[in-house]
Image 1 (cartoon, helix red, strand yellow):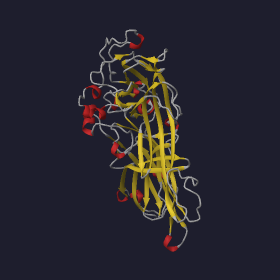
Image 2 (cartoon, one colour):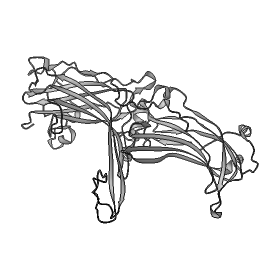
Image 3 (cartoon, one colour):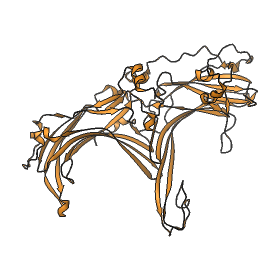
Image 4 (cartoon, helix red, strand yellow):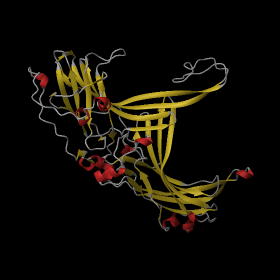
Length: 487
């Protein structure tokens, strides 16, 4: 430990949840404190912070008429030259804290922490409305939703020139879908729409010409998808989780790592335009903004295309009549194969202040003409991780199915005058205590003031567990159930 008088670390317990915890669950952890001599401090504090972070990169062209420097032109992260034409890069950044708690784990009325080794267990009840951790990037633009737990020895308020001794650990959170969306039927029937069909004779320099109309009706068997698998960090998408591989996950939970969406349609072509194909697709759009600059990342999560030759009702027909009633007599056609959504590609639906993740499911009639109208029926779809894969029962109001890690009987050693005695043998996490190779310890143990908190022969006094009740989210997120799914 050298001559460092005080070191601190924090370790959260994610159990067997694949490195993530579901919103609404209890986050267990411990703060480890080692001071070789009495230290002046007012308290040990626990913080958990949820933050949106956005970087939007863009380029700007400058000519020799520009006479101002990059900073005066609004360049936040780039340099501009004055005397010649060039393009330079700029970045706009934004950060928004939507969840923030600061709770005292242990107060010291005398303002002194006695010499010794201590463990402070805690149990933090997370709000059910927390969004999933996520990370997405397009070139130099990127966005993320991240969480971190901070253990702090509070001596005096933090400032620009002073920071209390502290330790941090990242936490991966999986959003909790509403129980109503899980239990209720999320299928959607879009009513008949009569769409005028126009075509443009580009080669003849003529305007658009109406060539008839088309009736389209669609059904989706679900508009809420619970993904049992975890997103892969290699995609820099979705919950940023150090996950087991697919085979391990299936072995642990006996689950499938993909979900399929069934799509049906019926259509009546009363136009002279030939239909090329019928296409169903699920599009994910990640949109994030900073200081008026916006970046959009679009990804096709699943698609399926049918050739029109199988369905006679799609043939061109110049008899342009009101065909709503005729459409009702047509058979429903099923898109095959169904839309298969892979867990490692999808990001959870999210509506935040600076970041929005939305999913649109559509069935489109693709016309043969290059500039013809392509009728479509679309709806919003919500995608979340399945809490059951993390041991949480949504139907039982978010009750955790797995048994919480049992803590040994504990006491508050700092309330005992004989604090030098150690009546309880504390148990540290394996990554702290089992690695005896001093060359590798630094990579396994959280650092605080460049020193390890748990030295060899760690034998701490354990305080009573501190339970922190559910707290509210700083920024109110949009209730997904209140959003009209139809576009």
